[in-house]
Length: 283
Image 1 (tube, rainbow, N blue to C red):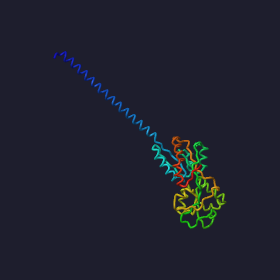
Image 2 (tube, rainbow, N blue to C red):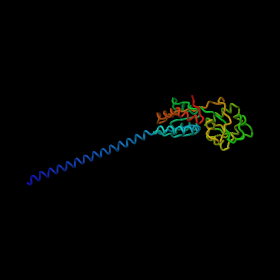
Image 3 (cartoon, one colour):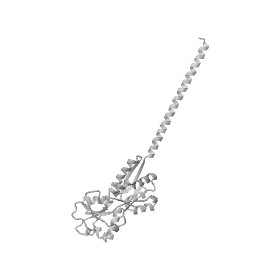
Image 4 (cartoon, helix red, strand yellow):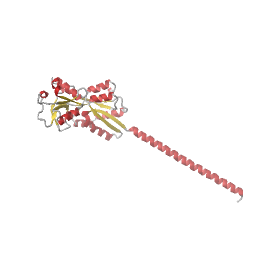
């Protein structure tokens, strides 16, 4: 073959090779771009999934522990993106925690006093507040007690020992107890026999263990254990009505989710659970 033709064909082969390399390089870059875009989309999706998972912190009176734990399990089963964290304690202590900036999305109090203070201080949204439940105050004694008071006056007798109650300043049950005993002209007389507890759960423990001969708790608390028995149901006219208000904490980052859970607490399903634990639903 003449040298000129060889040169021409050689040039064409070189051009073809270069074109092929360019095409392959372009495909590789395109694939790399697609992979990068896919990775970016995957990260974005992951980020969106994380944002859709919400943890709500519920600060609730100690007397609500068992019922709220059951209700929270029901709610989480129906709402996979919601996690409920429960913080139980005396309503007055929970009030102080919220005022000091502790994380909370909902507050369930065993007394109006604590809720009113938080609303007045703009810590709870006033328009979210609902009266959720009612309860009754009872006098309990150990299940094997030989003396079961037929009236509050029996507590004055020398043979009757220590009486447990919640600290009136922070425990609503203790405040209701003080009101009832004052109305019966018994508060000052019985003070030497009183042992104060941080919440109604501790009162229950004192009586169960025999460290107190009697104690004042809610009717719902007395139904939680066979180690105590109810001696008296106090006259509801002797103290402020026992109402459990609930409200959304103003600082919540999840107002919509908090509102949805608050609505669930007023549903038939939640009300049935509350009734099973000795509460009545407020009307």
